[in-house]
Image (cartoon, rainbow, N blue to C red; front, side):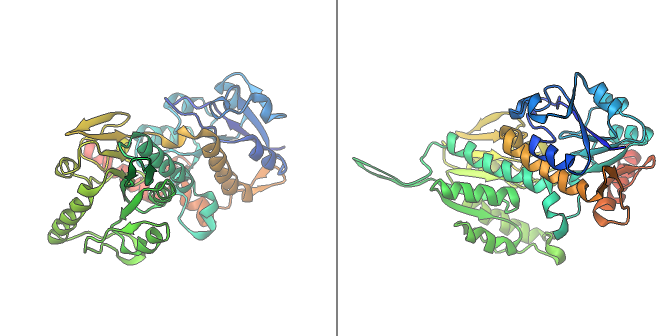
Length: 380
């Protein structure tokens, strides 16, 4: 008997993405998989129910849970949804595994095997499954557009009848996937772009996109490409040199987010005060603590004439392509383990083992389990 994948209408505020798009439904069906989709699940991404035909369209989430062995989600499910899931079913999506002890406990209680896309190992074989990167691409692009709309200056150089206007100066903090996309987009729009990352090895990527790398004279790379802890003297020098670059920027975009952890505070209140009035800061990490002092999730705050934009759920601003990218990530993740319409998970596979959040009534991922245990001890 073919497995049935269930897709829900996302209920989180402002969420417009859907976990699977019609094009990918067809790919799954070629593997013998059936779908049960809640009515209106794709509406926020401009997909009509008929676009998913001949999938089963049902009226509510309870019917999806009743008929499905696998559930695809975008946002972490609220506790009420988990309570409605069939015991022993499989859940795949963004699950925010390092936070939400109640969610983890209920998943274990319901004997649900869950895979968090945030935990998919960063190995070459898993690149096509990397939902963090695909959605960060959207977020970086959106940061650049938001900055361009709110900037008090033209991004490109403008020549008009009375003279020439110099292009805006944009500084991007963080050269991960989101940061690189922001750099590329701002450069295409014609601004003068600079970028900073604590990892010196990102210089080549930054410069290949047309930006100047801000060298603070401090290298923070260790083995494996991760940033290492800086000495107090190094932190002081880094802060001083970065503050100079920030003061020259008309637009600042910060993208230093760490999945499952509070984002590092990089731009201090003094740095904000040192910027020119009319400058704009777009803080991509606002909903996870923020890279900028004074930023607030979902709000625009004006400090000494500088607008600080606390962005949230940027990927949902572009729901069609964001959903398409995410849907393909899920297909590439689970399809290798579907044989003749049946799911055959290989627990010896490092991607399956590494991305498992809960399994057999316990938190499966060692790193998450240790974090949860430390959290519970701190509360006792």
